[in-house]
Every structure is written in structure tokens, then in C-alpha cells.
Length: 128
Image 1 (cartoon, rainbow, N blue to C red):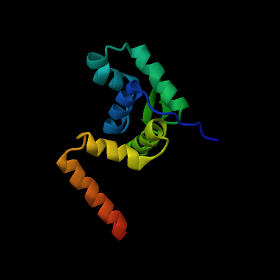
Image 2 (tube, rainbow, N blue to C red):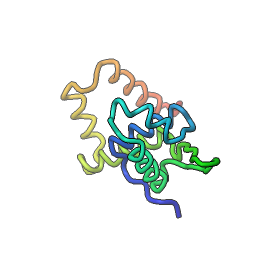
Image 3 (tube, rainbow, N blue to C red):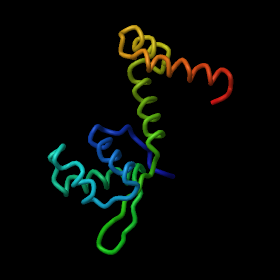
Image 4 (cartoon, rainbow, N blue to C red):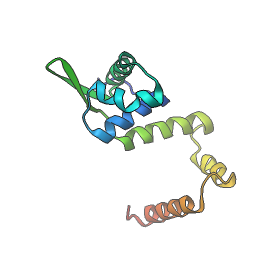
């Protein structure tokens, strides 16, 4: 049975973005991409990446002395999982309430609102 995937932490999102962008990485690639911004040491990056492997979010294989890492889950799937977890946590799964708040609070721009309306229209028409 695959490991249960938990919601990504902000640090894990940072790592996964690098892996999704580059498709295949070694720890050093992620360290170099994030060290200036995050201030992490290379062993810290390695530890976090191994945790992502255990969660099933990264896959890896040993090539010589290093491991080559690839995404174990797509960005869309991770985003959907995080969205569902957040919605369940803050609105007990009531997505209409979540979107209502976002619209009423002005958090959604007119452009984003138009995109949502288009998605809803396509879904209703069955053309998505």
C-alpha cells in the first residue's frame, strides 16, 4: 500500500516546485536553487527530500553515488490535495462558502472571476 500523502508544508512546496520545473534533480540542484532564498544547508535539503520520498511525493533511484529524484505526484494533483485539505479544515468541506467569502472579500480579481465563470459554464455544458 502506498504511503498516505499528507499536505505539503511551505518548505516542501518550495522543493517540489524546483523538482516539477526541472523534471529530474539531484539534491545539489535543489540546494543551489533554494539556498540563497531559504538559507538551508545541503543536508537539510537532503533530509526534506527523503521525507518527500517517504510520503510518496518524490521518487528516486540511485545512480552511482547520488540519487536522482523525480516527482511522485503532479503539481495539479498536489494542488488539488492541498485545496481539498484546506477547504475541509476551514469550511468543513463547504466549497460554496469558501468561494463566497473569496468573492465577497474582494480576494478574487475580475479576471479570476471571469475565469471561474468560464470554468463553471464549461462544466455545465460538459465541454471541459
